Image (cartoon, rainbow, N blue to C red; front, side, top):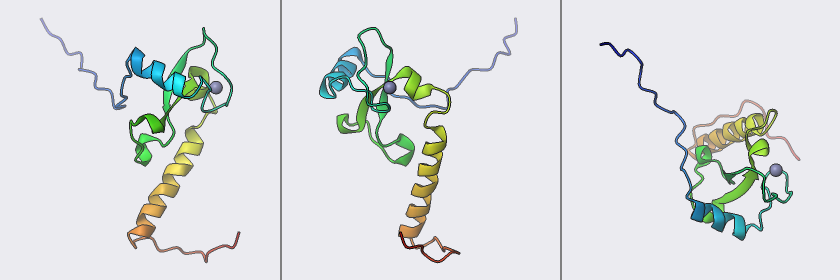
Length: 110
Ligand SMILES: [Zn+2]
């Protein structure tokens, strides 16, 4: 007997929310999708979304949690690139705050 099937380890550490937590998040936000700002209907699937992504130091505190349509959350052309930009910016800021970031371009006035 040989089982060479590798044990699958998910790289995504997602907290799974209980129905009760989800219900509270939903109620606290009146069931408004955090991403498209539209109400989530009774039959619609939704996910718990972190306002500040965990990659940016977001927490699992209720203030950081909002409901979002599954389609909005995982849909194509969603927030992935935007998130990536935000992460890159956060990285730069972190370096800057640590005094490690040396900007090559002069600061632009807005
Ligand atoms: Zn939505």
